[in-house]
Length: 322
Image (tube, rainbow, N blue to C red; front, top):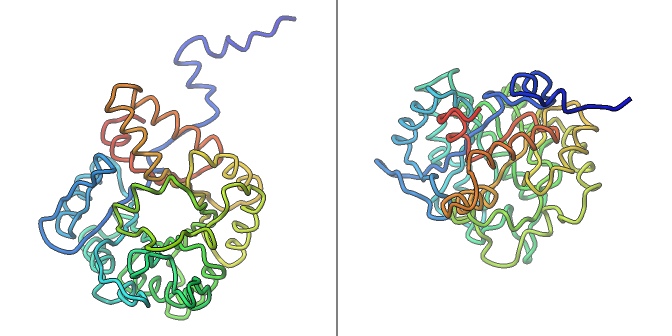
């Protein structure tokens, strides 16, 4: 008998009815870059449509976004004083700490606030940990990262997201948070973060490029797929609530493999380089931006992602692309 799979593609109604992959507004997380000062909305040249915000302007933009369903955000701090020991990363006066306090005071449970936990924007050398003898020292770095997570929890954050790729940092954070009464503060681990060229625009936005060398001694080698399971399952065992794969577009095989091996929610980070390439091509009229963006989003979900961190979130939700 002749098989006719096209019967289920006949029109839009039947295609929607049998679609295997669904997206919802609840899946999207929007990143913000927050800076000191007042009345600051500063466009980031390498990331069209993305800005630095001072806390007062951040509150205004978040309030606007909530009306479109943008109720999950992740914060990155920019412009703090840089030291060898990254002490400003866990200061009570740190810009992210102040932003979290202001957001939770104004929006409470309406807004789910996540913060990036890494010291690259707080160190003079731009690396994601503390350097001894020209090498990023794992255990000393973990101590600082745990203190940073605690400072954010004390400010009222809902979830911390360590992106440093140090070994053992999930366990250290979980133990310190629990010891201080923050057992309900969740951890979304950048479990599988590759040393990638796709981060270029972000490093301009966050002023976090390494001053010397690269991050290949702690971020993953992009040639390795099986190793990603080691990283992901170690973080699960240490107490992570959500596992993340970063970048997303070139690593959907990694997302798919992780999905088969964990029951935890999986996030993917549609990173700055992926975003800016789409924006640049769309600005030149080479692609249909909406169609490309949504094809990418469905691909991430099809691979197994439950949550998608993307700079396209505003376009998707405010322009009703979903």
